[in-house]
Image (spheres, rainbow, N blue to C red):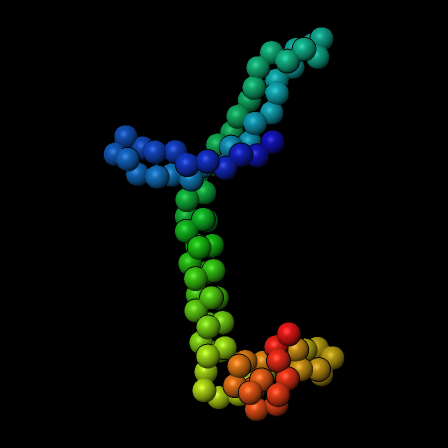
Length: 94
């Protein structure tokens, strides 16, 4: 099983850890312990948080732009538009 949890260093810095834990069994299949392998995923989590922040900023920029903006999907159909486009066409985003 995988578990993600924060670990705090001696200097009180947060480190995000992904721990994979598995039971260790004896020859009779009785659980005799647990084997755990931890991985520092702090940088991955920070990158994902930054990516989410940038995506939200871009979404807000497009949605609140004072110009009509729309997107067309692979089949040539309009599948996305901003508030200005909705105001011009009368079609809501929903």
